[in-house]
Image 1 (cartoon, rainbow, N blue to C red):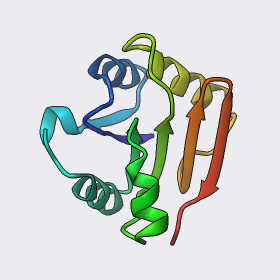
Image 2: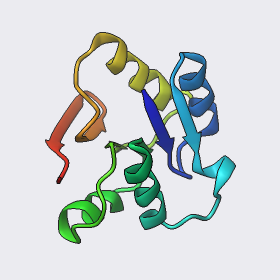
Image 3: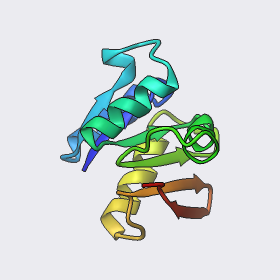
Length: 119
């Protein structure tokens, strides 16, 4: 899968996801300080799934009807370690629990919720 890790997504998790064979572009590495709307525009243009701890993406997409992305994975918890988000994501992908492309996915400890992205 192809991801765009928001600036708040831990670099250690980015590396673990890359090592598992996925393409991950990191805002922190390439465009530190980029505004959420710019991240969303890039994800839309390149059909990337955004990995983030920032709840503002839901508001931008659903309330303000801004650009959609290839998908959003919003981690709604404070990670215990920098590796934890990657481990959770890779488990979800490996177990094929949910479809990430085209969905706004909210991951909480012990719970995953989804809704379709706007067209």
